[in-house]
Structures are given as C-alpha cells and as structure tokens.
Amino acid sequence: MTSPADLSVVENEAAQALFDDLIAKDSRIEPRDWMPDAYRKTLIRQISQHAHSEIIGMQPESNWITRAPSLKRKAILMAKVQDEAGHGLYLYSAAQTLGITREEMMDQLITGRARYSSIFNYTTPTWADMGAIGWLVDGAAICNQVPLCRASYGPYGRAMVRICKEESFHQRQGFEILLELMQGTEAQREMAQDAVNRWYWPSLMMFGPPDDQSPNSAQSMAWNIKRFSNDDLRQRFVGMLVPQAEVLGVTLPDPNLRFNDETGQYDMSEIDWTEFNEVLAGRGPANAERLRRRRDAHEEGAWVREAAAEYARKQAERALAASGAVA
Ligand code: FAQ
Image (cartoon, rainbow, N blue to C red):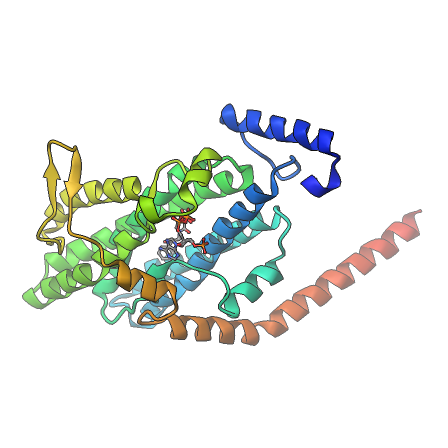
C-alpha cells in the first residue's frame, strides 16, 4: 500500500494523475493502487460506519428472535440477523484493505467515537416492528446501497453486490410480515400501521442530512463513491414506497405527501432534523442501550478471540516445523 508520504513530489504528481484518470474513466481503485490520503480516509470513515451499522443493526431484531410468532418466522428472522453479521464482516474486511485494523475499528465503536446509522437507536416494542424494519429500513438500505455497488473502490463495490442481494430478501420478508398483519384482525392492522408510523420518518433520516447541509457529498460524488445525493435517494425511496403502501393498505404518516407534476418530485413535510441531530449526538431512544450491549458482547467474546489467536499461532508453528522438516 503506497501512501503519498512514501513518494517524491514528482512521483506523487504522476500517481495523482493516474488516480484522476482512473476516476474520470469510472474505473476501479484497488488496495495496492496509490490513492490520495483524503480518499482513503473518506472510505475508511464510510465503510467502517457502514460495518458498525450492520453489527449494531442486529440488536433491534435479535430482540424478537425468542418471541417470533412461529417456528417459520423464527428461522427467517435468525437467518436475517445472521446475514447482517456477515455484512458487517465483509465490510470490516473491505475497510482493513485501506490500512485500519479490526481492533481499531472495534475500539472506535465501543468507546462511542464511531458513528453508526441513526436508525438503530429506535426500539422494537412489537412484532410488527420486524415488518416495518424489513420494509422501510432494508428498503432504504437498498435504495442507498445499490448505487454503492458501483463505488470506485473495488473491495467496497464488490462487497455491496452480495449485500444488496441479501437486503432484497430482507425487504421482501418485511413486506410479507406487514401484508399478513394487514390481512389479519383489526388489532393486527393497527399494530402494523403503528409500526409504519414510528419507522417512516427515521427511515427517511437514514439518507443523511439535506444536500445543502451534507459536508461530504460533493467530494464523495466527485470520487465516484456516492453516485446520488442524499435528497435524490430519499426521493427515490419515497417513490418506491408509495405504490407498495397502497398494496399493503397502510398509510404513510405524512399528510403533505403528494407527487408534484411540475417538479417531477414528491412534495413532503419537513423532516424533524432536530430529532436526527439528537440521535446523532447519542441522545436517541436506545443509543446507550445499543452501545452497552455491544460493549458487553465484546468483553464476553474475549475468550473466543484469544482461543482463535492461539489456534492460529499453533497452526503457524506446526506449518513452520513441517516446512523445516521437508527442507
Ligand atoms: N446516521 O455529509 P454526509 C442497513 C453522518 S445499513 C448516522 O451526508 P456521507 C442494513 C455522516 O456519517 C445502514 N450518521 O455524510 C440493515 C457524517 O458524519 P461524519 C447504514 C449519519 O457519509 C438493515 C455527517 O452525518 N448504511 O441499514 C447519518 O456523505 C436492517 C454528515 O453527513 C450505510 O452506512 C445517519 N443516518 O453520507 C442492518 C450506507 N447520515 O462521518 C440491520 C453507507 C449522515 O462526517 C437491519 N453510507 N450521517 O462525522 C452512506 O451511504 C453515507 O455514509 C450516508 C451519509 C448516506 C449515510
């Protein structure tokens, strides 16, 4: 991995020109290629935040594994939560190719210095929340992440391809939970609508601040990391939800939501950015609980990491002894 500090001024200029050319041609940057430090830092920031989101994102749903209403629902939910763990692992691996270690990233998370998606700081009091998370949260994740399959950094883009396939399954399972509830009793329909009411606005916040308050968007788009702005993706998401809400028979909780023929966009009420900023500042409904559980899990897993490291050490020692014996 060559960093700008390793090269002379002339070599740096040539390397920068090659990097710019690859970006201009919409080609991929790979781990051994030269890249500007700011590009590397941006990717580490975004990919590690994304990985942390997947790992913390397991918590709101694992809350329901023991209480899922049937064996079938329990098996599906367990598979989904395991998928999120897998996504976290691919993404940590992609970030590691940029020169940060897993330990550093984990330390940033459990000491509260790293961000993860605001959405996972909301609670899941009813079974319908599993439907709303799948439909709305995974739906938002798909809108945001399908363009990331074309991100300029190779390991990130490739990891996103598999992640997006799995997110599609997640969204369908959420939609199907809500559909079944909406075809059930009055109490079940109310539970589904209540969950949609609680998750709709936070799911719109997942796309990040409005474009004119998004400090990272312009540069990330110039580097072909982000392909669309936060507001454009939010619009796409709402456009996807409206016909699906009709099929479900749920109401999206925004009285001002309507398609504007003149602008070609959905008009909607103002998002409560104060709530978003409060959650980002660590004061959401479940921030403290999410971090506490992550910290506990990390401490309780220490013996597994130690055992794995010891096993790897012994394997390496044996391999070395065997190669010595052959020589
Ligand atoms: N929550 O300038 P921008 C999932 C921060 S995975 C918390 O617009 P950027 C799967 C942002 O980091 C969900 N922080 O930043 C699943 C920045 O802070 P910094 C996660 C947020 O990076 C489903 C500051 O605000 N997905 O759902 C949020 O260009 C179900 C300024 O913002 C990803 O991470 C937020 N919502 O755009 C799992 C996708 N929004 O770092 C389990 C990849 C913004 O400067 C169950 N990430 N911030 O201190 C992205 O696409 C981008 O990073 C954005 C933000 C769009 C999130």
